[in-house]
Image (cartoon, rainbow, N blue to C red):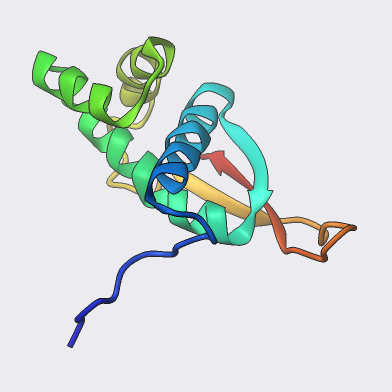
Length: 116
């Protein structure tokens, strides 16, 4: 049974967690690679992949749906005009998580999430 089972909490309440994920997803789309912790990368990966899949349709409805996920118009424009044609023939798996060295201060597992 999946009662009360949800995604990672990342030591934040709902509002800050949502803001963190939106900003991280926006950064991944705009810069195409971002260095972050493993937990955050694993949590943001499905959001980025769903956004690219939605953007592949290229319709007005898909743009409006992307507006609910991203705050910046540049990110939506990049998904629809650059990334969607690039991944048109791909059936998913648009991101890659590459492990890096542990962070010095707290030894957190660091990774780089990037678009393939």
